[in-house]
Length: 240
Image: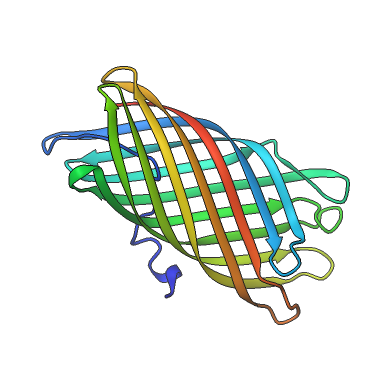
């Protein structure tokens, strides 16, 4: 499947959005978020970590919904993150972007699909000004279920399958540019509390795991690589 040719035609995955909108009304729900994440990139054969980093994150997004259909845009980035580079704390940057379309079904069920992009950069990984980049992009497809706890709160759970392309590059003395693909898994859960009809907040936890195999590079034999992300975040939202 060539995800690059269709990534702009399909929109990915809002893991924790819950909303209600009538056929005559359009709901617009901007949000801002702050959270904590743990990111790990490791070779699977040896278990040796390329890096692992824990960091604060911040982001923003918007959900647009009408009747049982919704669209979502989400952006998230690390805040002042570092990684252990041989005993030295060097800068690390992680950004995630997603676009999602979905539909609500009966009984609190929903299905969704879309496109996501993740970008990781390690500064000075191979020495001064020699940075390494790990980028992923592709499609998500999944389903979720949401239930009301009371008039002011709800809880939701979801899972998705991702078909991603990965790119591992560096600009060091001996640069490489390798590509691989994966079919991975993401799981999520969220709690939503509505302060009133116009605003509220949510708490969300996500787990993602992607194993990239059969790297293609003319100069290097790169082992299978697993990317794991565990994140929690709190968001404040309001409705138009």
